[in-house]
Picture (cartoon, rainbow, N blue to C red):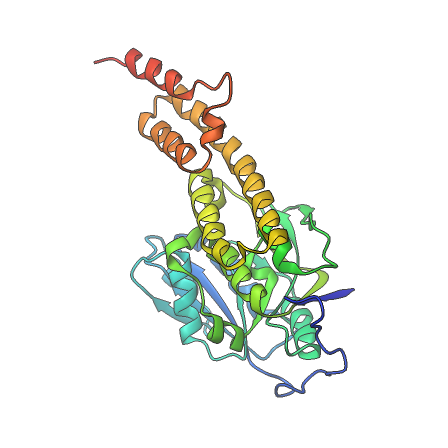
Length: 329
């Protein structure tokens, strides 16, 4: 079952526009894979891209100055275009891959994840049926380090309404590879913002859905691998970049009460989601004597979640001072 969303309640994708009317019958789809020290998973990611049921694809691997054998893995797949760049983060690597790609449609696959065989086909079918939609997204399976499926990603929001207000409250597009973009959307809106690299995908969804209709289908399209090196395991980084993204968007709808309310709910959600992880991380670092990491936790909370520090019974600063005094001189 598919749903189509628009930035305005009375503007809908025209369902009478059929597949192929905006493009050739078999348009090129670019799959961009940024990689930084994920060589142990990269081969599986590339294989999943090359084994799509839709075959008119190109694969571009961008090595963000890895120190492992990423280059050897990527270059062992002859159809794959490999490029090395100075370390700039995942957003910069995605942007480089996009610049080097040629597809009318673009998908960004992280090097530690795997596409399901029909991922491109299912997204392409929907975008060709609704050519004014900027992107289409599906669902995901969560897998562990050994690729065993754990559960399926479920959307926490009601996806029968406009997507922009819902995205303000939570980023339910959990993995970048869930999305297949029309190239024109990335050209017109701009690609990933390197200033908020860890949450640049969230920022891009907001920028696009503010202006353009998007589409959704129910099929899982990617296996999202969860492991200890996931960037999302750094709650200080994620709270900082996520709330920076929301604050960047706030001025454009601040005078619209309903959207301002969505925004406030989003702030509360992310503060609770990452803030409590930061508090738990603080105590772990405290027990281990990691003073610098404790200070980072406190600094992040003071900037984005000061009310947590002010809650009765919260004595993070005092606990840190006590721990510091107990350290051997």
